[in-house]
Length: 328
Ligand code: 13P
Image 1 (cartoon, rainbow, N blue to C red):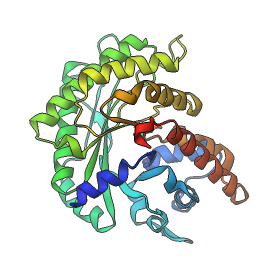
Image 2 (cartoon, helix red, strand yellow; image 1 turned 180 degrees about the vertical axis):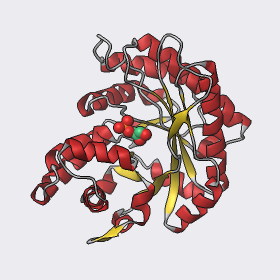
Image 3 (cartoon, rainbow, N blue to C red; image 1 turned 60 degrees about the horizontal axis):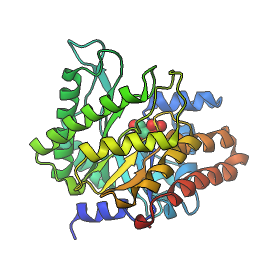
């Protein structure tokens, strides 16, 4: 079996999700500061060691996405990646967002230059899959067709480069949850983004069998007056995916996007209740919806480490147990 076949098999083992622990340094700093922990290389090591060394995490998690710093970082417990149990090592390879000229402050993701060379170095450190995130805001005139096309093109170029170097690419078009938009507006924006992404993937001859889609769930905006109804989210989300995601994609692993952990879990459960006859696995690749309960239990204190790990395991288990039977 080839390297990329092995990786996709490991990531799509029955009942497994993906843990996103790839916050950039500014983002993890914000999260650590929120629990009154100073963000230093040492505190980031401690926190990420806590996550990775959670006993039995590999029963529910098939792979963990890391930020570049974590891939080579060592500390009191040795190299962080030596604690991966049997979980696949993933790496965020984009270099973040910049403004897309000639739009109303819409974003494009950078990082294609030199990507092939970086991938060869990541491979030597044991990385086997990659992630690239593009974002789309919703307003009366966003996302624009320019932002939709430009982001689709970079996502597809990234995925093609990753596969050329034997990595499984996670393709992440994220329609941002922040905003006052309705679920219908999220449906239209997400559908347009997905349509353009799969056209671009086809144009760039990306092997759909060896990639993972990491989309947002289709939901009303965080600042809208509408509450999130998991059954409605499942209905809208699967409706859009049936129209825009080819059956050859083996797995859809949702991001949580700021939807609270217990609601994100219910949405995943609803989708899997409907999802028995669908062609793809419907799994998760959460950051906040897995890490927030764990961080709140930890609060940066060594004595809370065991209870924080128990929270992470609890949420991984809950999410994995709701995956449809055919994935188990
Ligand atoms: P959230 O689950 O917190 O949205 O993070 C997922 C992710 O990896 C964003 O790129």
